[in-house]
Image (cartoon, rainbow, N blue to C red; front, side):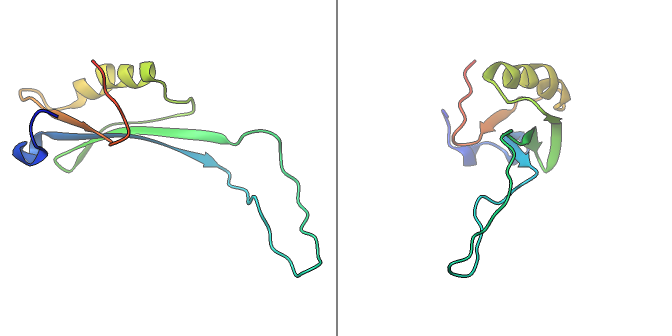
Length: 106
């Protein structure tokens, strides 16, 4: 960033994040008394994954989307351009703050 975060007014900060959850959860390990086996069946399929992408600005959530496909750079940029930007209040500039391990390149 070109300026320290504390110099940007709180109401103009837009925090953006994407996260995913897998379900249903199944244990990978089990416990038993010494000398006894733990047996179970496990499907060879990967569990379904639900992804969520959203923004937070001045305490309000914007452009919350849930979807079943993985998040690629192209799908994130499409969400940013077509969903988030039109959803933010008009007439003022914003500073978008991605999660530390995300990179935004425009």
